[in-house]
Length: 315
Image 1 (cartoon, rainbow, N blue to C red):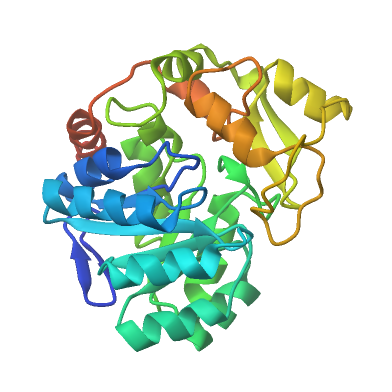
Image 2: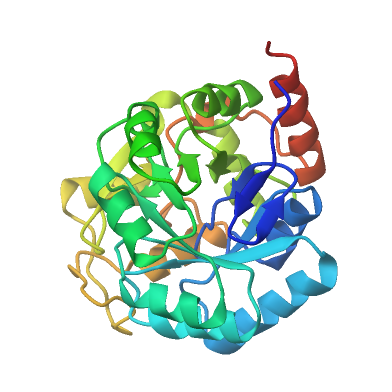
């Protein structure tokens, strides 16, 4: 199957692949620009960044590619609106928003002409998004990494949501191979969002120790934890995740109030940062359900070549 273009508002990506926005600082300019340069849509993970840091990352990405660059931001973050405004001021191509839902972001997007793409997991929220002005929706199933909004497979969600809306529908969760892409597109998806496969790329900003940890993960190592955001999160089991599951993890020593509402069971910003920096013992390692299918750290260009080849070999 030859993969079609992906159109979101006035944007046209030659390859219908959106790279997931993985915080904290896994998805930065280097990864996003490599994906955009390969013909997909690259996302900078804005959550956890200062406004100045986000500006620098957007400008760096722009210097590395003429492709499509967006941001991903958590609605649950206290600085969500400020991050979106900062990105729009920098001329970002689109905004993808998850871990919650914000009506205000659509007004910001309408004012600047910036496509707003919420992450949803139900027909109801997809229809609300379209009515508020969303340019597309990312439909995330239970297979996804990080924060989850459903216990349903993306393959179950896509057909009904595609019938319910007239905007592009992008499938996310558990998509690793070209065969996976073809499967969800035949179910109605207009494109896919892939996080874990790009977390395990050469251009990912994950520390080498974290990338090696990804490659060692087995199916039984993938667990659900309770996030301070108030949602379940999918992670790789390590000593820290085990403590979260058991309820013995230490709460935050100090709090920078990074979330609008925090359950205070642990500090998610610090836990994700430790993992990103290579501490796979006391860091929180978010991952998709099928991380065990990834056996090699590859450059983004090679990942795209393999995905396209795998898809084209399917009749």
